[in-house]
Image 1: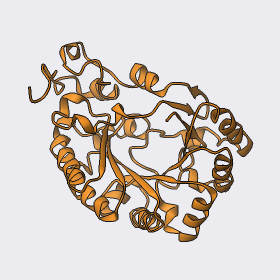
Image 2: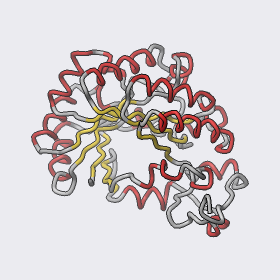
Image 3: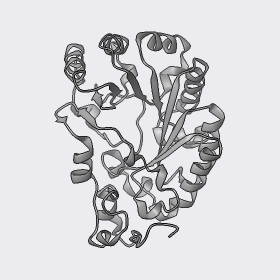
Length: 301
């Protein structure tokens, strides 16, 4: 299914220490309602799914109108990519579901408030997000969570996985932090070594697998994922058009590979070279390539 991601603005009620959008909330104005509706109408010619993202899309006063417009255009999937806090309010859950939203992607970055709230720089955000997930699942909604792997939380990925299983989410993803925006500004306090996080990543994935949940990683190269190659999100990310505030990315996969990720010369010897995208380019610019060891044959053979 081809989808369109619409960044409807960068305003947000969290101030995450790792936010890839960084200071954009102070530099760019949100798209207006009519402009977003026009994007939806144009995108529907080619796309079956839409993702409202930002920033935090749910804090806009017109979000129900925008979701309703997507429903009228008969988008099959209408996803809200969110910090999840507003779903604490049951009335809002009912309203946005009635408007047409049918897939929700909240972000949970800690197993307890102390970790999550530290990373979001927003006291109370953990309790609101957890309550929001509970409210959505009580309404039989599809919930796909994202957890950004950072230096403060990577040792707790198994505990986060256990919490997500307990909450009944349909899918969870561990995404290695992209060291741009605020994460770039806070690099050494936010970005861990990939080699250090992997035992915790695999333990967390294992908890989800055992519970028959769909689990994924993002931005972790194949050389770290031996035995877990089936859980690499880049293999299944759909063809996506992105409407950013200042530009349109017609093929996100192509741009991500060409401009966002990087490979070393030694990667050419890896069994997975053709399908692996490599890490976000900022990571080896700081830490080098010593951790990245080519896989010389398919795992298990």
